Image 1 (tube, helix red, strand yellow):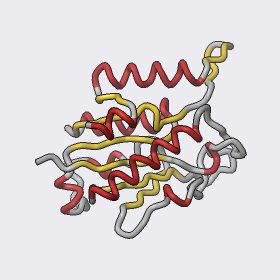
Image 2: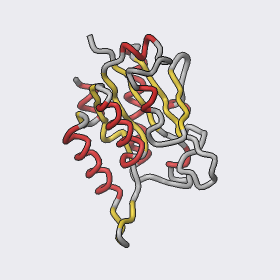
Image 3: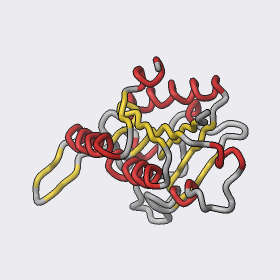
Image 4: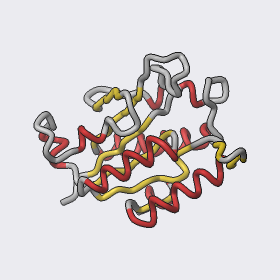
Length: 181
């Protein structure tokens, strides 16, 4: 029987409207992430909170979670990392420090920020490690990017990222679709 875990990535103050790096649609994405977190807690499934912390003042993430309802509770695992894919080392089947609970996890459900960075990196690495991955597209957020002197709208960045992940790395569904299944 598959055992699943919800991974919440970087739902932190700096990505909300008053933060240093506000993301498009972050409030709505956080609402969906909160719904999923409640469902996983009620089901007794594993929950892993990932928070990337950097020492630079220009860093895109802070140490504070935006909403108390999304903060870790009890035995839920917390991971602090210093890079977009550093957490993935914890997912490696060859990692000797993995707990028995982590060793039994086969399916990962990923939500959070930013779609084109940490979500993308974790999903690709997890799939490479052999996990079955689901990304909840409306529980993820990103921002406008600039390339070659042009602004790429956050919605386009998000859609391109989700399309790329859906092509070869993950099932990409809405929160409602996932919770109904």
